[in-house]
View 1 (tube, rainbow, N blue to C red):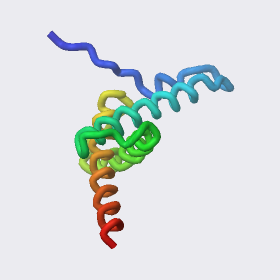
View 2 (view 1 turned 90 degrees about the vertical axis):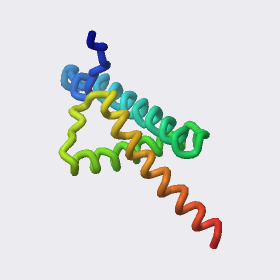
View 3 (view 1 turned 180 degrees about the vertical axis):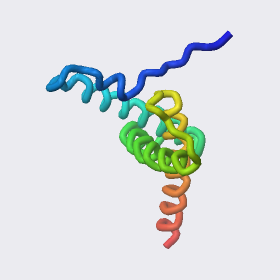
View 4 (view 1 turned 90 degrees about the horizontal axis):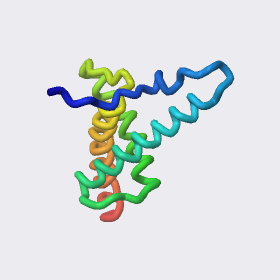
Length: 110
């Protein structure tokens, strides 16, 4: 038995009439949601506590970019699926968070 997956894509969210900003707004909401979820998951994995709502979103968005580049280099493409986007963004956010903590510790020592 196959489990249904959420496959709303950013391209599907943008399928509105020309001049209608609902698709753009929906894309931004989905982008922020993916960033929040990815940043939160990465924060829990790396240091077991969240960084705060704004930092989690920023971490997830930066992580999404970093993860997208890394996955693209390995030939894996997201194709806009939300669940895969969250996985890619989480992997990238974990990497960003590890580097962030290394830089903060190094700066605190100096």
